[in-house]
Image 1 (cartoon, helix red, strand yellow):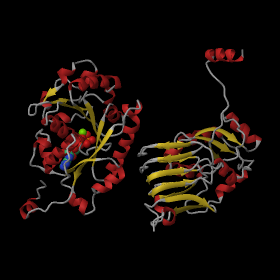
Image 2 (cartoon, protein in one colour):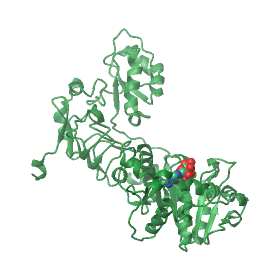
Image 3 (cartoon, chains in turn cyan, brown):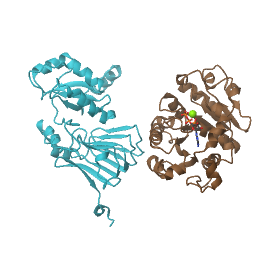
Image 4 (cartoon, chains in turn cyan, blue):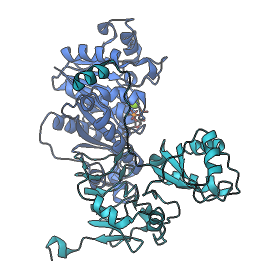
Length: 267
Length: 271
Ligand SMILES: Nc1ncnc2c1ncn2[C@@H]1O[C@H](COP(=O)(O)OP(=O)(O)OP(=O)(O)O)[C@@H](O)[C@H]1O
Ligand SMILES: [Mg+2]
């Protein structure tokens, strides 16, 4: 019987092979020979050191000029120095793909959503880059993200998230029913809800979902980010500081809105 | 079964050892059999504050290594009944602490003592983790300044994630805030955080506020736990905090600047 043989082989097996889908950070290379590549990336890493520590990354080669000779082994080593672990490459031309393979980086199929922490995003510039990056790979980003927002599992944390802790709700929403201290970091592919003061960092829509939002009872965050667009503490308008707020992307801009009395029923 | 209490802070020099000595002495004075253990391997300090440094023969590390029996290393306090000190080694380092070794000592102490106070080293590395691992309760020693508060927050996170209670999914470690070296005058001038600021950030119950006091240094230099000086503000504040720990309802004192007479101001005494 089929089930019996399965059981027997499972008992004897020292391994199992399975398929898996992953949501990974994609780093799009535009100029691998640029002197400023590592300096700029280093700046980025220092802004969110926990996020980048030992973070797996896939290199997107679509933007590389065809005539450029890329030393992938060297790239890999230098990314590692910044904390990143290069896993594979996607896109690009055959010549670059071959060179990557020689450095131990296989080719993976291009994913539809690959704009996690878009490095072109800056706190005070419009977020136009992000949705476009998603569209470039043929994904109708907002609509699809909206569909995914329903029915995905939420991670619920019922204790304070203290300094030094990092929590990642992969593929879903993150709900914290207590406060989040300065020096703590919340990451979610979906929305982030904080039913307490948000004093640490919160990065929602990590895998590129531009419809993700952040909600909190008291906005005092060190940094908030939606799909790669971020604002640091200094940029939070005083009028909304320490107030209940939601943060979302609107027309490519990061919006920080207070929950006004009309929602809470007070006058 | 005795209660294991860790005195911890993350940041160094905030008053953990001073507070460990005060609480241990306070519990013993009220008739509870208490032992206080120095976890700061290599920076032996507690025995000085407790005034028993000349009576150390064996230490915590000797016991862990099986080089002496627990009873050979325990020092009975000369001034206060029910009070014992387990000093640490000055020549070894934190790697001498093994979880299994510490656990054995803790289990033995639990059978005999009501309170076991672990004086943690500073930092968030091995020594501090070892001191907090077996805790049932934690007294978070914090000074009213941002860096100390941040480190306390970090340690609270460790208690919630890396203590034995957390790892085994037991009831969480009971948390208490002890705000020390509190100078109401500097707080009033805005140079230090006030009690409410600290409580807002850490959000744990306040066990006590110990005022900054010169008597603390004076007492530690003669090897006398400050709680025995019942004329000093700091000694009284520790006695109050011990009472609260034991369930008494005692109002907080020494939070607001006191009106001082001309003489006191001239001599600048902070008692
Ligand atoms: N309430 C107080 N008023 C004035 N000085 C104090 C007070 N509490 C502690 N001190 C002083 O602060 C210094 C550090 O105290 P203590 O050794 O207890 O801190 P600690 O947290 O154990 O330090 P470490 O991290 O090095 O172990 C000592 O000189 C002590 O006398
Ligand atoms: Mg100490």
